[in-house]
Image (cartoon, rainbow, N blue to C red; front, side):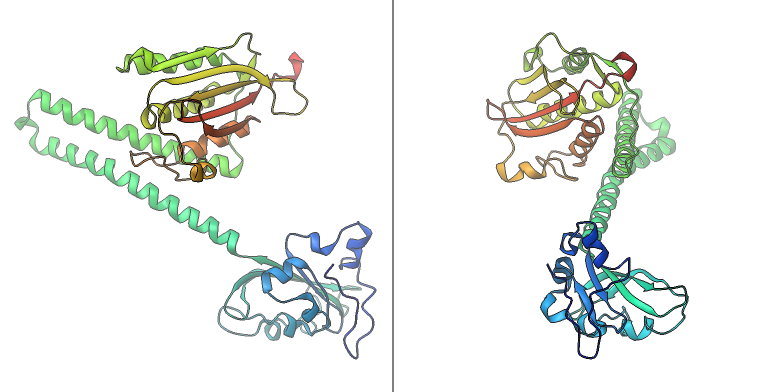
Length: 378
């Protein structure tokens, strides 16, 4: 454990921390090394008495080197303008009413950025500082989020530019030269505008879904769902659009448990998985609906749906990225957001979804939903 009790020369033994110091963690059965964030604690004399494992990882300084050192030496932080942080904040001097330093970006030696916040522990209000408790967090997670947002904006801008350019071009042409076109030409241009408007609408709907999934605000309106009939409707739509009926094979194992779910959201999941199988797969698209064990504790039964094709499948090295944002199985269009949304919808239902290789060699997606019957039916 990277917690030291040895004192620096001239300082008392650091064995009695303030109630909110690291020593109170021991009373809770917690080791500071188990904390996910870096923890650095200095005593009333400014000597480091705690330097946990996360702090070692973030700062690349060993606890052995840090313990007993002055805080400003063990943790030589600078602000983004190159000023020494501890001289600026003066934790042991300054206003006696201060209790904390809010989180901000600071720099470690070598220019590495870290998020730092501090708490000043006093034995009594306005009394001398007995402990300075510093929390350190790596900025990499925040940078990944920022990169993801930047990628989302870039993707959306790219996906919107093409249909909007088409819509603007055709409408401007029709308005300027309406009399020069035949009815067939006008119809063709208007059909193109209609299709591009639908594309924009779908993209906006995807963005709203992502926003709700990421913020935990995706709402469900549960009601009884006949999932076998729902799959059948999607197959009929493809056949009506011109695909041969023998392209699909539907197997339903009876009896299925009563499933309570959001029918619109389940339709969205089925639509995406079937579209992927038709567009990116080959051969027969097989859909199997079976009763199965529930993925949720306290429930015995659930419903499982497997969608597979006979194409080339998904490369093994890509399997762990299938449900991430912007993953595309091929170059044939799409935003790469569909499967990310599918996973979010399934999980908000309390279910699970996996991807693997089908017996015929293609891709196989399998999602399982708990029956989620309302309490008054139990």
